[in-house]
Length: 312
Image (cartoon, rainbow, N blue to C red; front, top):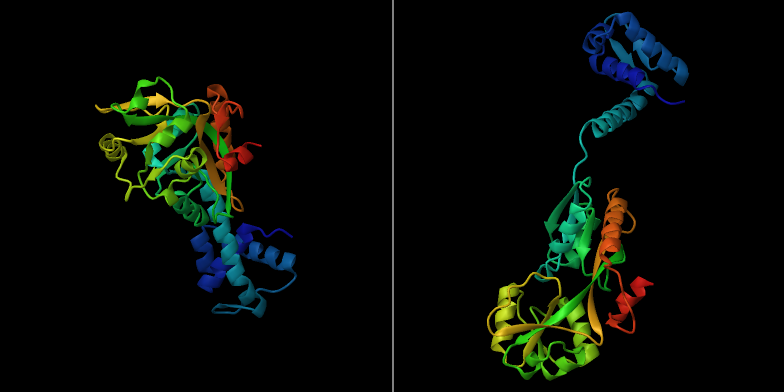
């Protein structure tokens, strides 16, 4: 049988009041209607739940066992009604990798999907996003996914963005209109933080034999560019579509042969995906298709091997 919440509410109210008259008054129904609800519940359960005395009502042993589950069922019913009546809360999307401005992509996707109700917030790194997803505080995350102890995460590549080289204007390589990644082996790659926190830059440096000049702390883009400007053989990599006012003394040169691509991913909890995840994936896929965000040609472009596998 499926329990009738009206009957359960009548039972719980009588159990609380220990009196049919007071219970009927609280429920705003007649005492006769209340008695009929209790009788129908007892009939359906095939057991007596209440002993009706001259001065008060007492619960039978079966009634005592039913009372707490009945309260739980009523609370669940109220929660179901509240979920239908209140507007859906925005789903939280955490972004990381702020030096490369992930919000550029997120804003473009959400602007093309105005029906979505997404609240965007900052996160320190992928590990922080994974922890927030595990606690159920976020629906998804957006940034660079890399291999690590994140077995609870599912992810999908949603954008591949070319990167440019930034180097001092006085260096001889600055005279070229386009550079090859291998050309940067004559420079030192200035990092904004510890290489362990910079998966893409570390893999790029290893692949093209570019010496590293690690940083101590990520103090922002202006600080990174100032370091590059003051290191005569320094350089760094930045997304090609990053809006950048190039400071005096620096130049930006595109890279080709091959073109390095920075992979952006959407991540979510593998075992407990948030209901908003399918719509987010569709929104990123639709915008990516319009903007050709996932174009990759092995003979022309370069991606770390882990990203190439994710494209398969």
